[in-house]
Length: 80
Image 1 (cartoon, helix red, strand yellow):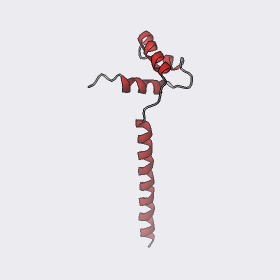
Image 2 (image 1 turned 135 degrees about the horizontal axis):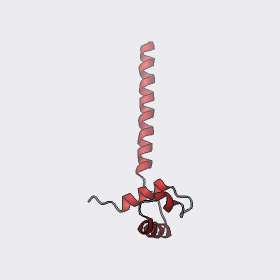
Image 3 (image 1 turned 30 degrees about the horizontal axis):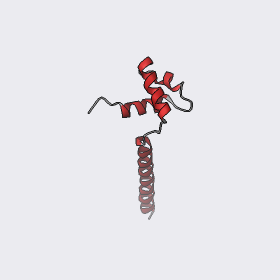
Image 4 (image 1 turned 45 degrees about the vertical axis):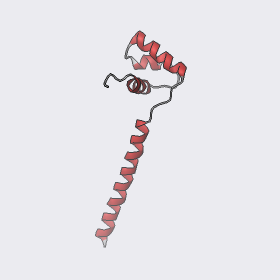
């Protein structure tokens, strides 16, 4: 009887972890939305300073360096 409860408890925890992992991966794969002005600024700044994402992010309020790098890499991937 105690063995059954133990296995059910483990199964419940595994299901919860699995659903959390699925939700997390779907959020990570979601492309951040950028306005046309932000896209233009990112391109211009990249041409000036290269892959200095924190410097570029400093020019766009509310954006992190990670968001900008992810956006850039998704749009300008060299592997095709």
